[in-house]
Length: 463
Ligand code: FAD
Ligand code: NAD
Image 1 (spheres, protein in one colour):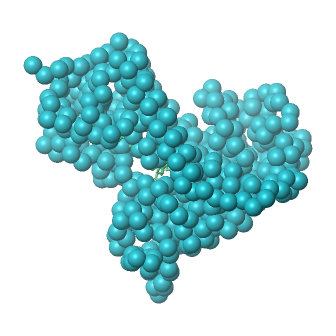
Image 2 (cartoon, rainbow, N blue to C red):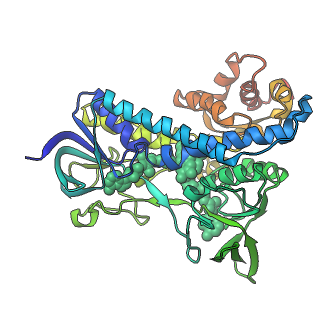
Image 3 (spheres, protein in one colour):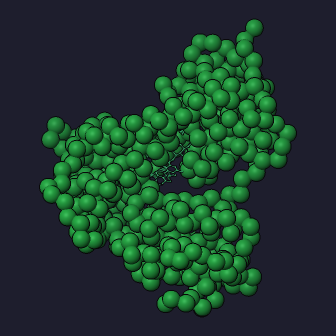
């Protein structure tokens, strides 16, 4: 008789492992299959965590080489030990993935090592062993989208995985795609001394963010030395021992031109990963982009098979996957889990950071919703001045008639932390006036949030 579980989760990324933990907390017997040697998925192994480790290290390096002198701090000769920086990153990853192992033991979750395939509803094979499960959750995540004419070899032409592992600072790095990965990893290598050129198909960067914020963001990145080729596509990249020869063309057509690089980072998006699961044989429905179709409760068209995270529709973000994991586990345990898709923050962890929640000005215009805007620049915030971090602004969008918060966008120091206040306010259905009336400690960056909320009604105090 195959071993049987209430729930068998396939994939131990933030969607899968969090779903497994929540279900175990609620008394279900749970197994989680993972084909990678370690738990934590893309996020902990080759995504969020290693990228943030390198962002922090490179930020420290840039502060020492560029910013500390203004504070009256000068050091002797500064040197970069990239091998040590990479080793530290590996230590950070290791501590995180071991933390998930500990949580599995604590919650008595069976870790099934190997690639899982669903052989029938309620039946899964992992590395040759059969298991039974009342419920199956697919949380197999995503992989980087390939670009025709540009073959990733993870040496000269890298995806984010190779881009996190370089053992030397490239002379010239060409980044294809001006989104989350391109700008975060482009920033890392720029700060460490590379010349960085971002080639972006559209005529703007970070296409899901508010346009005004994106324009200001691009200006700041340009000041940091990153070059941009907007409205441009790469049609070919040929790698050799010495570098990569790229062919660029205007996105709307026109003459081709060459560009030489030492390293090319391909970051044109990610796509759902469902290979090897046996979905075609089972008849599990997918959408036109290969994502598993689910109903509002994460059920697929096959009873007993559910899906969450990057493998289904919605933003490909770790916290979105986690919240879906919790909501689904609670539903399977008879509770009423729910995710509010209108209030999922997004953060680009460059410096300054860019953070957003809710709708952009472009969204509101397209939907014909009348709105008011409040803006406040960090140049007018005392704490930002003391820090020497005055680039950026807070922008709040509120309903013209009701004053209810509709969206918030922050470009500035610690924007990713600051956005949490506005996400909380939006979850509670707050108005801009509500945020403006909250006492914010002085001197903090969060006063810029309060001032932007006051500015919605034309009453900012410090500008
Ligand atoms: P994944 O984390 O992709 O996990 C899926 C797991 O399933 C994998 O471990 C895979 O090995 C396993 N698997 C697949 N098929 C099988 C099978 N058949 N059998 C067994 N196991 C299988 N998001 C953020 O919110 N913040 C960030 O700062 C951030 N930074 C990122 C940086 C980079 C460089 C990248 C690439 C991504 C980043 N993301 C970030 C996105 C984030 O990593 C994903 O949204 C998140 O990991 C999705 O979680 P998931 O559980 O759906 O899938
Ligand atoms: P992305 O969708 O963020 O950005 C891709 C960019 O590439 C877009 O600007 C797009 O217009 C551009 N593009 C597409 N095709 C192109 C082409 N042929 N030539 C030039 N440009 C092209 O994707 P990403 O940066 O690869 O990241 C994938 C996903 O991973 C993100 O969307 C996000 O969900 C997640 N992620 C999140 C974080 C974070 O939360 N901080 C960090 C990294 C990754």
